[in-house]
Image 1 (cartoon, rainbow, N blue to C red):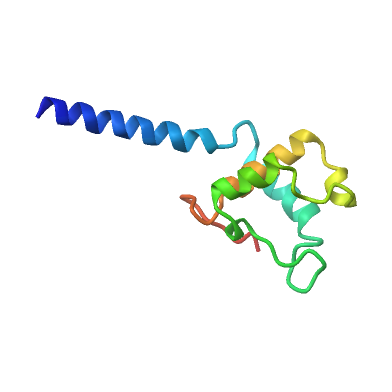
Image 2: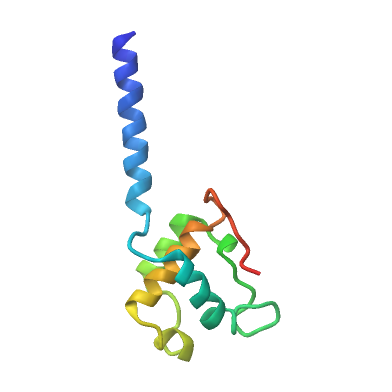
Length: 108
């Protein structure tokens, strides 16, 4: 029984470590929400050029990959005018409210 407890504790620790490896850190999600609404929603609403986009459109891992690979077109005025800190704040907001997060949000 003691060994089973150790195995379960080890598995729980491994699962936590694996999920933390994908987590974005250092961003301010409140500032990120403000910046998202100010800079991103201009192009990312229904019928606009960028199409509707909310935190719910991706999972936490997908948002991290999106920002890690710098998938957004860097030539857009809104994206290129944002600092690295601003982008980290937006990433934190999107990550914290992604489809698989504890607090999913549409950001209406």
